[in-house]
Length: 142
Image (cartoon, rainbow, N blue to C red; front, top):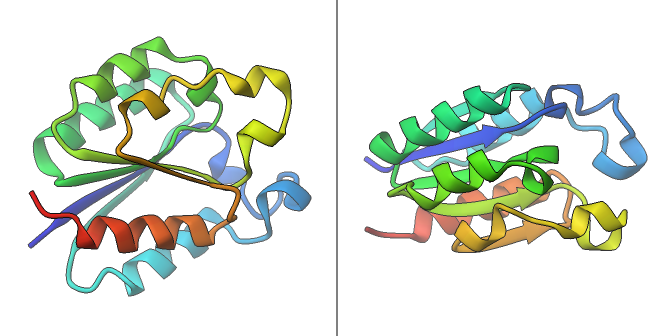
């Protein structure tokens, strides 16, 4: 059975209420439920943390347990070298997801420490991006 980790960084627990014009109205729990329903028999471990160190720990856990890691690192995408280093050491294939398109937003979002470690990036498609990432993950083989 394929094991897919879905990791979410800071402030994603506020989805549905935080800037819905940018991030949409679906909650993180809505996304989790939609992914679970579409998992097609794969095991999904779905986590969110506001802590950079905890996110690094979760990436290290995914490296040992998952075939694919889907990650929305939130603001840590643009700031965390520690996360970058953990992703570089990760044995799982990595799919980066962003609800909005960071390249079309503030200049500070142009720095991205996740993309160099990712097999693919999905951005700007809202919550659908997670389902697209899941579909891609289900098609990936070791």
